[in-house]
Amino acid sequence: ASPATDMRGSSDVVEGGRMALDNKTSLLNTQPPRAFSGPRAREYNPYPYTDTISAYDKTALKEAVFDDDMDQLRDVPIDHSDLVADLLKELSNHNERVEERKGALLELLKITREDNLGVWEEHFKTILLLLLETLGDKDHSIRALALRVLREILRNQPARFKNYAELTIMKTLEAHKDSHKEVVRAAEEAASTLASSIHPEQCIKVLCPIIQTADYPINLAAIKMQTKVIERISKESLHQLLQDIIPGLLQGYDNTESSVRKASVFCLVAIYSVIGEELKPHLAQLTGSKMKLLNLYIKRAQTTNSNSSSSSDVSTHS
Image (cartoon, rainbow, N blue to C red; front, side, top):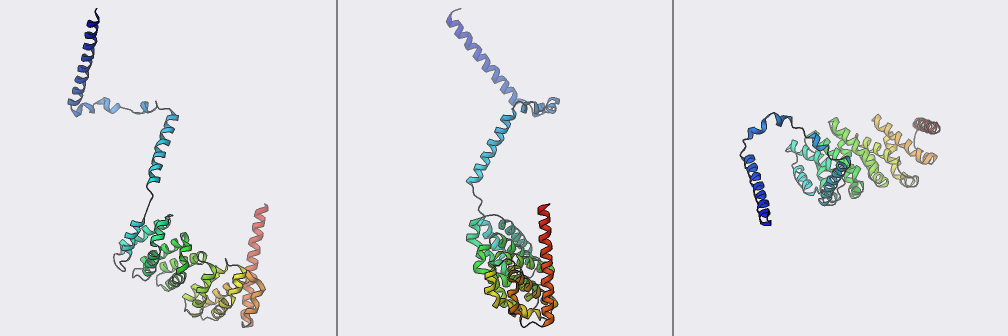
């Protein structure tokens, strides 16, 4: 056969192949949908095909997809500033839209647990002032929730409270007067967190005048808070503040409320555990019976501490 004949032959084969492919495509496109619902379709099993990918390839594929996702996340930083602005707008509807404001407070609680510097730089003061204002809301569940959010912010952003310590402490202590137990419990938790979050010296300077002038139960809450602060203060700082602290506690020791008297004794015991016998000269005006009771509580605290330290020694050497 001549070369020309071979060329024609191969050309015919190509054309024939194209026609066959076109016919198949046409047939596929015109096939009614029900043709795919036969028994074979139900028997289709993809697993044999996926098994052809080796374990190594699967791992590489997963890592590639994961890395790609992470790159996208890094490219789009989470910024809650706009969301927080909307939440604050909602929270400004005091005594209205109760359910919506509950939702806003819960959303704010979530954001508080995230490390989002931009939100706090931009909105901290507004958030704090709105929360403190919300403590006067008509709905007790809103008041309790506001205290929970406040406590969470204290735990995560303690340094930002430096310029607002007095206002925050006073509002939290006032919440102890609430007629609803749920709010009082939330206030107690917030006060405890305040005592461990704000600088001890600053805290005591705010608490001392409150202890001396406030009525029950605010004075009780303030003494309990001060006791917790004293547990974390240095001996030197406590010495410098004794002149401010002791008068309120001696006054509390004379209070008509037994819980205030007891809290005052516990606070004096906490002071003794830091400075020891150096406390005694400041207690000259106590009656013999009151001094005796205080010594009893001091001895009990020392026994408890020595027992706990000896039991920890045993567990260390066991």
